[in-house]
Every structure is written in C-alpha cells, then in structure tokens.
Image (tube, rainbow, N blue to C red):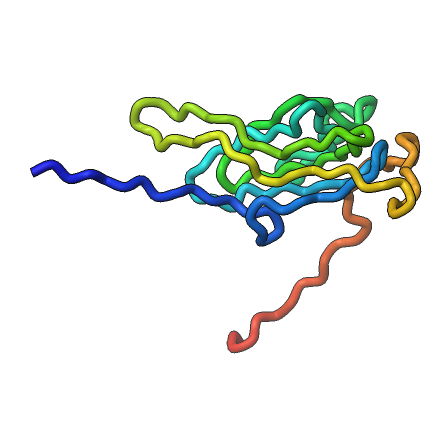
Length: 159
C-alpha cells in the first residue's frame, strides 16, 4: 500500500496579515524591522528591484563595527530562525509596484525545504497622501550605551 503524504502549506505573515499591501510614497524612506519568528525556517529576504539599507542585525547596529559606515546596502538578506533585521526602505518610483519576497533556501539533503514565497505587496502611495520625505542626512546612529547603572532589586521571599 502506497500512502501519499500531503505537504503542509507554508504561510508567513507580516504584522499578522497574509500577504498585505504596504503603501509607501515614491522616494519616502521608512524604517522596517523584520523578525523571523519561525522555529526552523531560513528566510532570504528581498525587495524586488530594490536594496535594503541595513541599520542593524540582531539588535547590533552596523555603526558599532564601523563608525564611519552607519549602514550597509544589500540586495537580499539571509535571516535565520529568531533573526532580526532593521533596515531603511525607500519607496519605489510611481507606477512600479514591488513585492517583498523570500528566496528559496537550500538547507541540504537532510534539511527542510524553505521555498520562495511572496510576503507582501509594496504599493506606491500617491504624493498627496504621503508624509514629507526624510532626508538621508537626518538618519542618526543608534546608540546603546548606558548612562547609569541599573539599581539592584531585592527578591521577595528571601531573607
């Protein structure tokens, strides 16, 4: 007897929605934070026809490694399980919708398939509805330096 195994469909969400439409005005710069909340899936993220301006990976600012380069430009980014990415995305030119996709990731003969899929549609928003553009020079570096020591707390129930 031959049993056919039905493969479970893979679904990823963006802010809790399946394949949402994200609006962004042409030339508008938005800060996007990605979290791969899957337990075992690798995501090779790509914004079709555009690049990511990476600000931080896994909470570590790019400027921490090289203060002269606050960001890094990449056409796609591999995000492992529990990985985080913070990037600036610039709105595409009017009339050129884009898609946020994952590219196929080969995890080897013993790994699970990580197929390519569309995560979201990027739709250029009209200029009348859009907020003002953020100039590139206004991007400030992210600093994670403590200015004071945290106070120690006594645990309840211990003497």
